Length: 224
Ligand code: B16
Ligand code: MG
Image (cartoon, rainbow, N blue to C red; front, top):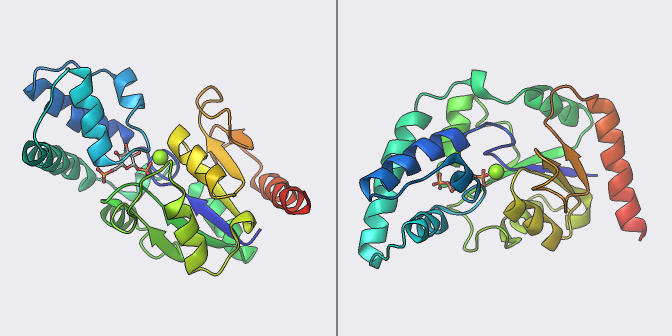
């Protein structure tokens, strides 16, 4: 195991609640009802795809220009929330796990669908915590396409099967599988069934044991 690749929303910080508030406001403006359950479908997918899903829920169709304006408006509201983020919102156990990886000489990368990833990392004080950051600005194809994960590994000169991915969304788990990388699902077993291992989060786990398990997982996949 030479590299750990982290998703951002749902793994490092829970920004889904802010996406929800901003999408809900946009949906209300368009006369569409939008629930937390609907919001689940937006996790890990791009901004444009998220807007398409919201419009589908209301049975609405919009022109390309209107879509761009709506996505921009939602983002302005979302960024207002993100500007209030502090390091307090980093999810439990994340910082100690990053430190453990560092002491073990395992590189770290961030791979997020979000175009706001640099701003979020800045607000959390994590801007220099990852050797490489791949975000929604640096890839052409969103998850479940493996492009982002493969790019992160390539930039660090690591073979895909020596990288472990941490993901909270179904689209991200699929992307990691397609990249040929072992994947740890962070969250509920029912949405992450395809992951090699599922954890509720990095808090309340023995992180040394977890790391040993991951090394064994990588080794077992390479020996197949
Ligand atoms: P933005 P991740 C994803 O982040 C979110 O899970 C998803 O809900 C959002 O639509 C996407 O980023 C794009 O975000 O509008 O900020 O570019 O989970 O890939 O870190
Ligand atoms: Mg995510």
